[in-house]
Amino acid sequence: MLLARGKAWMASLSKGADSILLTLQKDGLSGELQDLRDLKLEVPVGRWNSVVKQIVKDRKLLGGILLACANQTEHVAAAVGSDRLYFDLQRLVLEATAALVAEEVLSLAPSDGDAA
Image 1 (cartoon, rainbow, N blue to C red):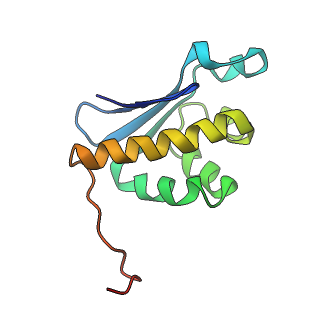
Image 2 (cartoon, rainbow, N blue to C red):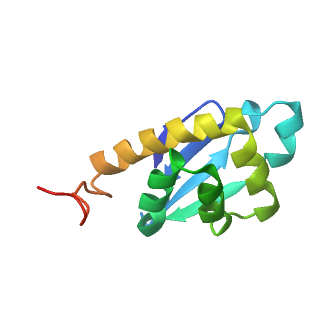
């Protein structure tokens, strides 16, 4: 199921609804980024919260989280290091999260540290 589509990235939910697949769209990559065209990131739903937290906080920590989810780990640093790809990924993660909540794959709840 397609969750969100950006200029360079696409997010979809796996058939078993147990992971989110982030892929680079081949037509959304410029010449120097063509080497990344086969990069796929399969993020388990249970790890999605970590991705959402780090997408706006810390690019390096996000890269570390995504390394564990990548089919081609050697391309993760280049994908996260590219401003154009990173900013598109930020927007895509937020849109995909909203779609996951709408599909009731994820639910919103206050964290343990939040006061009521």
